[in-house]
Length: 328
Image (spheres, helix red, strand yellow):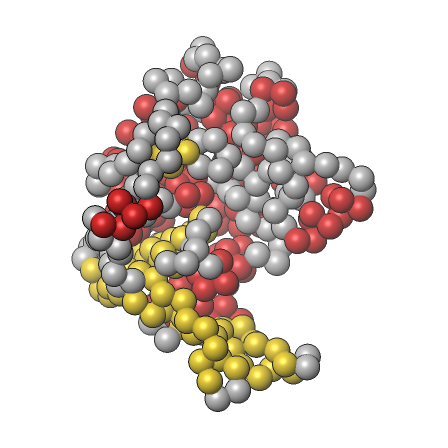
């Protein structure tokens, strides 16, 4: 289905073509029993791009959702957009909506002579739990600037302004911006896009295999100095709190593993790449966010030291640990 089609596909027809062959990846225990199981697929690529580990259906196509943002950012820099490292990190982010996050997004707009009213992303409350509580306590409602993709949209608009492209229709089919994003993703991942739909914030989202997504991140993490890829990776490493936020697992992972870049995506997507080019991509079948990090951390633990709190989390009973959530 393309982005212009309004008729929703028939679920049974899609299933008839075959469901992804996911496998158990993460389990939640309570007492002496396995209480829940999250199925999914995952792949780990070595420094030469070869497959080191594969679980489940890694050749099926999935929407990476917000994990595409760092790849998009590469395309913007290649096209000539000038951004600070903070602005690049936020362009690659699903930020928590703190005042700092919103200020950086606003700075991208203002530097290009744009205003919040020019943004085309959806409105939302801050994504971070603490940030949302503070926002609501202050009497604020949903806004485009608070929405977790505002940094990306501010950068997209800034490039349109630089190139003299139509601002009002920057998310419309046929716009040169969208062609740039598609070409950048296909080049970095080394795979032709298998389909296009629309992400929650309004930008295109592309069907890709997990190895393709991992390859794209490996190119960023191991890129030589002076390239747009290296610039995006450096900005993410310098400002992991802008890529996600305080208390978020992606920020914690990047802080704990020197040289790593990481990005999550809605519906159970996680990608990580190390500075030597080792990379992984994960898809949780049920879209469960809690299962992303345990399997990601377990796969990483064979290559680097990973903090215990990323490997598992406790299941509480009466306020005390009685089980845990961890990779199988």
